[in-house]
Amino acid sequence: MAVQPVLRMGDPELNRVSEPVTRFGDAVLGALIRDMWETMAARGGLGIAAPQIGVPLRVVVFEAQASPRYPESPPVPRTVLVNPEIECLDAEMVDGWEGCLSVPGLRGVVPRYRRIRYSGFDADGRRFEREAEDFHARVVQHECDHLDGILYPQRMRDLSTLGFEEELSLAGRFGEIPCEV
Image (tube, rainbow, N blue to C red; front, side, top):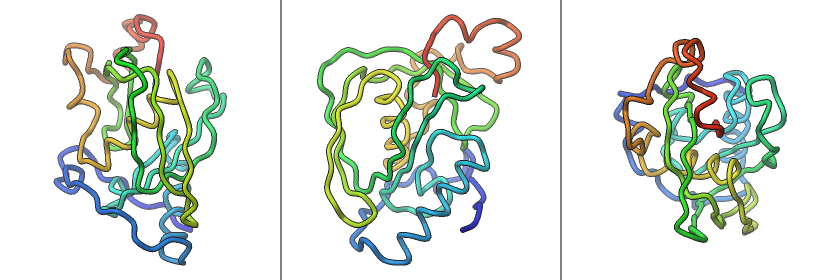
């Protein structure tokens, strides 16, 4: 296992559409997933997509437990999601603060679907499906966007909400919109 460098906004690799995984349960996919977990943990993230560490494959991992960084956030189960598909369960969208390991130090308000169903495969190729809402749904949508070459600032409606975490916190802006990724 190894912590990998995280590509940052501006790197053209982050704008590519990733390729589907075709081989499951092998050492290559296993090593990629271990590196993703290690890198995510080392950077204090909730999730990471393979393209963020320079691997253009449709793989994301995510998990959220109570932490000082996200004290209000409900838990999100530890998940490896390969070749994901997302279905919106209704048209309701909610705004929430998001940050990203590839956009370090910045946060912005992003609209996301409140309720989704996502499906895909685990590392061994077993298909699964879950429904998610609110914070859990936001995390899934954020991570899966990376697989299509989309970073959260591209989803923002109002760039005046984009700012450095420290400045936003000092200005008391985080309390305006409750949800964070």
